[in-house]
Length: 492
Image 1 (spheres, rainbow, N blue to C red):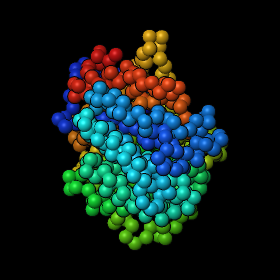
Image 2: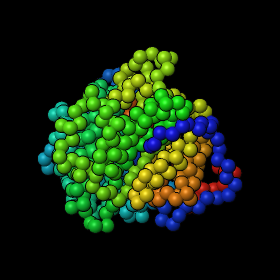
Image 3: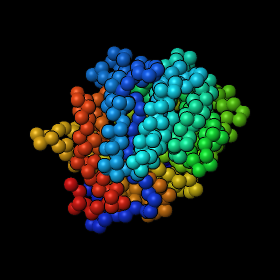
Image 4: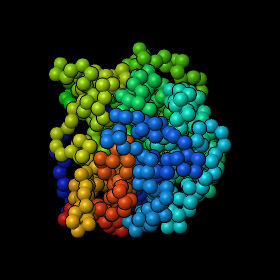
């Protein structure tokens, strides 16, 4: 969140000699997304989403991979829920596929699509696992993209209608609802850098998309409030960037301010404070007319109160002012958001991104648990009455099945241990954090990286769809059983 001077230290095993207990009621979960695991891309009335189109476009996804089959969760969800029960999960965070429920993004629902989510929720509840539903994890119906997509204001209206359909169908089963997962990625990777679907590279469209995603969230919150029982909780999940300046020079601090504006405050400003930041609007005034984009009443809708804020964190963001050492068009190459000749940072394309020193994951992301602690602390201080959930945290490594049939992933165990220690420290220092969701339950289609990156606690052999719990799955099950972290010498 707020730009600070970097204090960079290499990732290291946490110095923890005793077990760390978490507060009573703390939720232990795992997360997935529909397009990444479900498969069944053309079954039971489902039509293409923007990710179906994008992944079937040559050159967009590594190795030409797509989500047509993915982890085949649509057909294997009962077995997968049994795996969750074996792990002892308290909760499972999944997303609903918009084109499975409402194929064109308009009109009545396809009951077969809703039946899948009814059956999934029932199976979870039967196993004592709380279902946590995300309405949108990037799979916009292609028909709505053809009509303009998220840069088109009407898409926000269509999303509110879709939210009403899902709430009516599942409101008796699901008590925690999330409108959007990482709208920053939808807006700025989808319409700015083009590394995500729909693959457009239009900085003005990215900013318009951000506003309409905010508006869609607010309208959906209104729909959920009117449709769900009073006990239901509403939320949104943001991938807030823990922005750090390379030095405390004025230029580097301004670079951090710029990225904090277009990376974080473009959402937290209207969502939590009821206004877009003045500096963001000034930085981007040459791209969009904010006075015409934001209509009367929009900000009141966008800032409807929510019960929880979800936070996704993987790695910090290190930036500096241009120094002449980076060629034009190359400044965003180390921002951890994929390679493109187009920047996902409209109005701040000149900012230079740096890879922090130290260990990295298979994604090339720096491992730094202090970033999660700092982020939780900053958000808590700025919003002291808003409970938080860590809704995604995890790491990809080059996992493989050994000759004995096991998947040993000590690097992932160390990563999660360190980041859970950071969560524990944030709670001890006063942050109201209600739970932690590991990303991901299982290996899956990792967007533009295809099947070449494995984040799961459960290994998926895509040729056979066999599931193999990794060592990290067994370790996480022990964490859940303990309701806390074992000492470092308990890592295995």
